Length: 275
Ligand code: ADP
Ligand code: MG
Image (cartoon, rainbow, N blue to C red; front, top):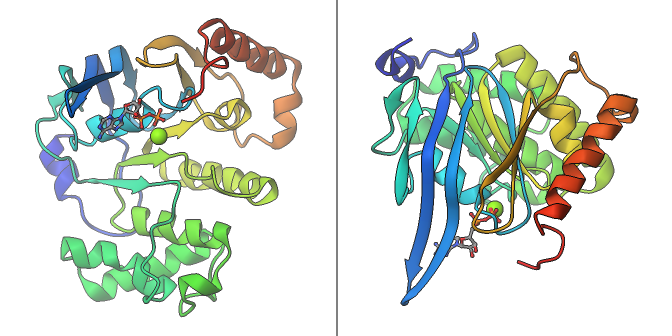
């Protein structure tokens, strides 16, 4: 599929096919007030079309920076990003972004928060509302269309932000520690729902986390990043059929894998620094 075709694919409903994302020799240094912070160095990996990739690493290792670079919102100091083989040279807008904070407008209802995406993109209002309502059903928040954010739990607010990110049916989802602020039980449910939604849509997902079990549960591949400047320590492929359950994390091979990832991070000094 060409980028033009993908970018022009704005119809609602059937899932847009994921696009591949390649990072080639990415490095990034922030310069502010005569201070240089090297955030990333020598990042090379590919997220295949429709793959779920977890970016796992300690706080401050450049995970969020890498997502901004993937979206063309930050220019890397070195290297390039390719989406379906084409270099990203300006913001790539056919994607959905989910942050740790749901970033909802408090004066808009849940439904109207989701529809912000349609307004920003000039999408057909009627079709967008049909799609928004469908997504609310799919993500388990049907019935809360007219609720205001203040009336929703943290998990429900995050579900609204996921619906907003999915509204235009983008081929790529960038998720930056989306469940980091949620309590353990809500988070577990959100992880399973994320898996189900991904299985239905097969978008390419870059999912940032510093939680090892979360990465193992969700990902096809885990890209483990070391402390700043973030570099790829290791890439693991997770060999476990979907749908995966929380119990799968207790499988002997997956327990060993989690232990190995912990060791790799520990050896890199990830646990001995504060960021
Ligand atoms: P992570 O998401 O893994 O916690 P970030 O990508 O947010 O890491 O940041 C990586 C490093 O770059 C950190 O040391 C952070 O302080 C620094 N940094 C991030 N954004 C900026 C910025 N806009 N200006 C200067 N330094 C920044
Ligand atoms: Mg971050």
